[in-house]
Length: 85
Picture 1 (cartoon, one colour):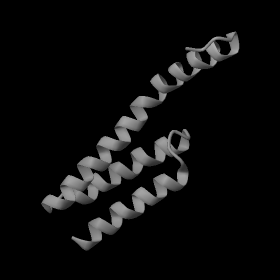
Picture 2 (picture 1 turned 45 degrees about the vertical axis):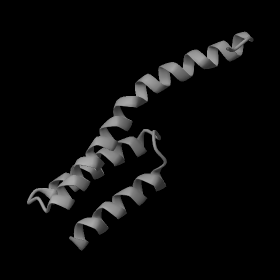
Picture 3 (picture 1 turned 30 degrees about the vertical axis):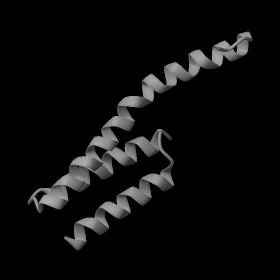
């Protein structure tokens, strides 16, 4: 438990920030998961699912919820997986 006033304030700020960022993080993770499943199943709309995952990752990276390089890496791996199937 935080003892000083500034530490307590930081805890409050972190909680608010986490609540605000969680939907974007969850949306990106779900989109990537759905895209991977579509690719593995050989679904016709796998390309569209990958595109939606890219959009979700870009939005999370733009808000600095995930690092932009991490978003680029995940997008690259998704497209690579899509092209190999």
